[in-house]
Image 1 (cartoon, rainbow, N blue to C red):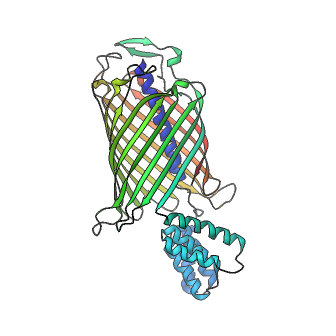
Image 2: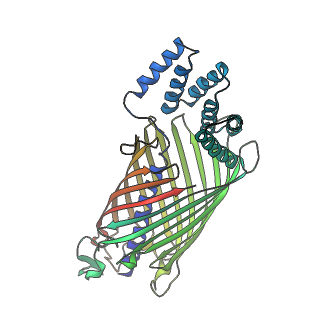
Image 3: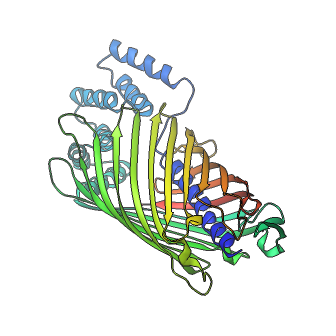
Length: 454
């Protein structure tokens, strides 16, 4: 049953990473947003009023505010710049223009407006503080070398922490056998931590190429079921550049190399290295696609806890394509598909194909408790996966070729405390069905934690 235990431990890592990924996706949507309801109607009414009173500063500022909230940043910029033509002595307007150009990615123009605001005599302290904050961000963005990162620490409860079989009866050498209690599913609390640090270096070329490197780390520690402890570290690096210049816009390619290591029960499970290619395409103003292909060499070595670990050594080939559609300023839709082929060096029973798809959405809504300008977010994802192994495992059942289906549901609520810190509460359900009872299980989980980014 050693194979079963190892497989379940790694599946625990996958399940945890899916939850963490959903949390990060929800965090990514926590940009300032406006209340739902009749916002679009208010925007249209403010636009018509601006046409009637093009020199009224109050009308212009109201339209600029609503335009920014609905995502019409260019419209907001136009209205605010018109205000400065009417009255140049408006430091708050210069500040807001600096913020808008920052959001549009025009950092040099943003710097000009922010510097002008900061030079204003007797500038109110709150305006100066906000202008200095965005000036520091502009300077950081214009630095050719830039670090960003995300950290998460949470506590998780699982009804089946070791992903043990749903029943006590399994197959062993083609016969029915009963599991002992320790090998069955066990509920447990645990601590989960993750970190992702990204570095970009602008190469100063016309194609806007830059060197991108990402370090990812993850660890889970169970309070009781220590064999389900999983840790991993992964590093990728490669140049990103614009492709097909003059033919297509907003198409980037990134060839990269990767190296990583996974531990199970604080024991090395496998190290890996490989390479891949990532591409991003802005299909429309609201639809983006990211696709990648990766091949990795898995180097499993035998050790005291995993004496037959080397039978899993082999090559993994995987491809993913993901679409993100901004349905509105409040709702984003996700759709992705993935395919993986793992070929073991010497044991065909460990070779498999994996196909999967994920659908989901993110919904942002006004802060219902603290009435802050930072919206809350709900992120819902559903993943369906299909596995097929190449050959029967004679230690389980020599006549049955392994098949299994995964159904994974995750729901995340994100509550931002400020621009960098977010509290998240998530829940999920992982159901695996299989033609061999050894691999079928159910696992429900709930997790809460704090994330911080810089």
